[in-house]
Image (cartoon, rainbow, N blue to C red; front, side, top):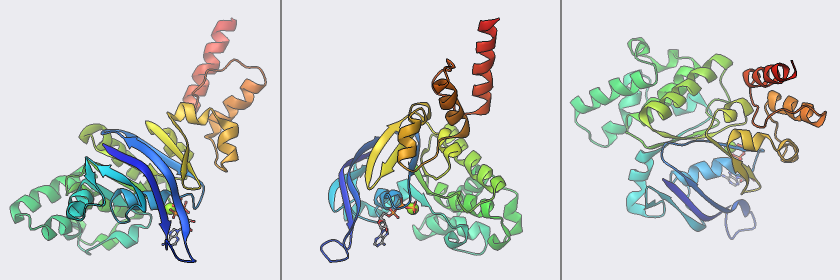
Amino acid sequence: MIEIKNLEFQYNKGTTAEINAISGIAAVIHKGEFVAVLGHNGCGKSTLAKLLNALLLPCEGEIFVDEMNTQDHEKVWDIRKKCGLVFQNPDNQLVATVIEEDTAFGPENLGVEPAEIRKRVDSALDAVGLGKERAKKSANLLSGGQKQRLAIAGIIVMHPEYIVLDEATSMLDPHGRKEVLDTVHRLNKEEGITIIHITHSMEEAAEADRIIVMEKGKIVMQGTPGEVFSEVEEIKKLRLDVPPMAELAHILRKKGLNLPEGILRMDQMVEALERMKTKRN
Ligand SMILES: Nc1ncnc2c1ncn2[C@@H]1O[C@H](COP(=O)(O)OP(=O)(O)OP(=O)(O)O)[C@@H](O)[C@H]1O
Ligand SMILES: [Mg+2]
């Protein structure tokens, strides 16, 4: 579990250039959860991501990753192994030009035995669906979505408990996005890896177990996608969109249609309307 306690973070603290990025966040992320983090530009999402894996340290408060305090210098590498971070740009995350070498980089640096590295690299590449691409050798020949999955393989190979994706799908085309999302959902369901997915996509957030909405360095809303997206006016005030079907349901409810809460997708809308029709007949 990740526990965030009274977290505060300022860039350039104590200087005239001080910027308040996180101002009082408390939250718990449980093992096995798939959490989406939403929020307008500059609300502190990336700062939070970096604080979670000890790339930044709190100015006030604490973060515990499986009871390890991110401020404990001796635990930094354990925390980074446990909690991997995937960034936005697929090209900035390659550490080697050969696919297998890229994935082997982390365990090699830790001095893991070569035979064990081979096993782990094979299973990590299979886990992200790049088993076949391995033969291509060069990581530069991969598509954006494949490169992001290679970045995820570089994390999987370290046997993590948590993966934080900081807008990791935002530079990809729809196909690449789907590949990456399917991969992380599978890792969440089958391997029990906890996913924290920072995104501007409402459709992607709708697929999470829980959504956390941030504004100006604070958590301002949280709940299941059904709960969060039923607060249409509130979400819009935060300069965010709601999934189109949630908005349509909201408009139809205002016009007097008795639609249930929690409609996020087309199939749910169709089902709800069909049910109303059956009742009327
Ligand atoms: N390295 C830095 N130095 C100084 N200020 C920074 C730095 N990085 C971010 N900030 C500022 O901290 C605040 C939070 O930024 P952060 O990048 O965490 O937001 P974000 O929610 O990830 O935004 P986006 O949706 O644009 O990625 C913003 O005001 C930003 O300008
Ligand atoms: Mg960001």
